[in-house]
Image (cartoon, rainbow, N blue to C red; front, side, top):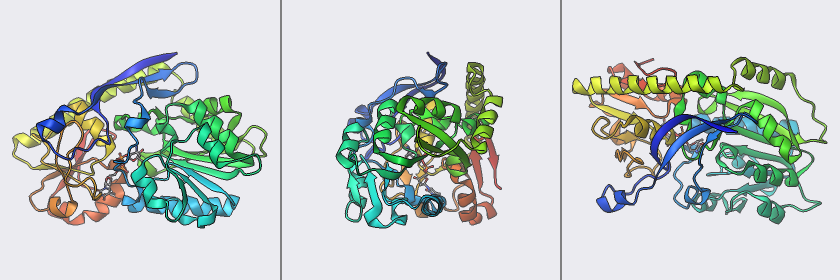
Length: 396
Ligand code: JHZ
């Protein structure tokens, strides 16, 4: 049974960067009510009423996974690891984005699935790319009884798909007998520990725990046999899943991870009620910090037009009266306006100049990379604002 624990209010789609702030465009903006629930049967945390994916993954999809040095490196590292451990002849990626992961493999071995046509167009010349949503029909188009995948990889995608039964059934159909599914998604334990409620936005239909993944895959003849913590996206998990009859044994690391999650009471509804209280307190504090600085005539900008920050700005109602603009390296976000609050987005070259006093870290998950890059800003007295794990100002 689904029990609601968090209400993040009226929210736009986090990918709906606006091309203009004219009344005509603003009037058409789509909003929905973002609430989050806990399922007392399978311990899955999810958005209560997910948006239909066909409105989300269009040919205007903005996020490019290659934009950060951290992610390029992380994908190169896991690709090397997969080659060494599993040496796959057929490797498929679900949600291949701009090709940041598959580019580490020989083209003849790769199958890419990417429903956003603008992104699929980026990889289709070099790699066999299916510009479609992942489901059983597509699986049957790609694989046969004798042609199966040795490895299926999917980073920050499975948590975006509302129908998990269809998704995992299609994976079960596609894997070879000892094939492996490797998925990466933000970790629920990290979200609870960091109070990073901005991991909830329309695309993150689920924020998984190992406990929940283990329960869910069982419905599709699959089992979770290993899980490892990874640093990306502010704390994620990498799950290793195989068919029930495959040779892989449950690892000690997985047992330890599940134990840790149980110690943190991720299987208890009371944990989420407490989290919800902390989120409300965090909102109050962040608004106070920003308004206080503004009353002292400080110039505040935001760093990284992340989808996550769409949740923050719309939940806290932090708009262009408080934040002058957002900087982002992604060319197709520049010149646009943030969803809901309509803050202009410009390039860091234009925006990160001597007039900036404070920068809200929208891309807090890349804190290390950004602090390294922005040494000059910090040296001349510039400071950052964050909300994780608590709302505060910092400079190192
Ligand atoms: P980043 C997206 O979420 C959407 P977002 C998606 N739903 C998802 O799950 C995650 O990605 C994986 C910019 N930037 O990765 C680049 C700078 O400007 O945190 C990006 O636009 N300067 C698929 O948007 C944004 O910040 C920099 O120095 O929350 C980061 O977005 C760096 C490092 C990044 O994901």
